[in-house]
Picture 1 (cartoon, rainbow, N blue to C red):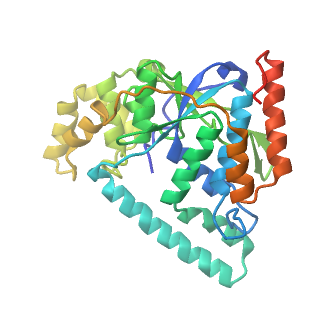
Picture 2 (picture 1 turned 90 degrees about the horizontal axis):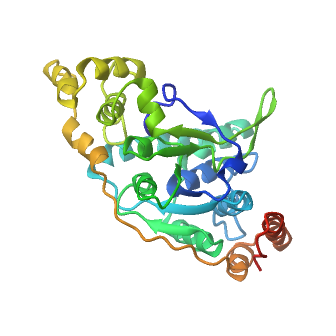
Length: 337
């Protein structure tokens, strides 16, 4: 679900070469679910090995991250820990939506409707414990640092930026911005080209900067948190009925302080959640101080996981190693292997 503030925040397009030498803290679950949804066969079936174990996430993690590493970036993947109890309602809503999509998929399957199967198949992805552990194993073998967050992965990624360990957070959501990350990069792990009815379009990464958001909207950080709560977050899904992003900006500017912003709404009986509790989650997120170390690239371990365990093509995997080595040589770095 996430924060619906994309239409009001200023952003700028980036070229991948602008991120050369930069460390980006990626919201792992956000990226992995993205791969599970997008990397599929024409009928919507995820990629699987002969034992019918899903491999779409491994394919995405390997090929997309090889492309990013080839650009000279360093990556940290941050995994979610325990979710806050207030997020339970959001999980319930998501579970209901998944069940609905699964039923529609089965109906399309019975009717041999390939387009319908493709349309609904991505709506009921499930990330298992085994998939998470293998994702971590692959990332570390690729020389990518892995951090386990105590709570929300995106908020921990924001903490790495605030500590100066990372340059930016990589995520499609906006929570990192609301907890104070200086920079948020979107579209980082998306495919660089997307097929549309009018043809192929290029997808470039986009930067959203915390200070620029505050300056252009004319608000402070507490008002940004209040705005996020008004429009709805994972901790209060739906927000306040009848208030979208544009109305929320007007309200936070008029009332200025969080107590004043929510007092009138409370008196009107329009709040069905404890706004102070949600405010505290963003103001004092559940994060930890981390020392991040980057493991060595391990070709043999990658081949063992992808080729031997999950039947990826050895030729295709080796080709990616070659691309990465070429990128290293062209940038004057030593060979990987």
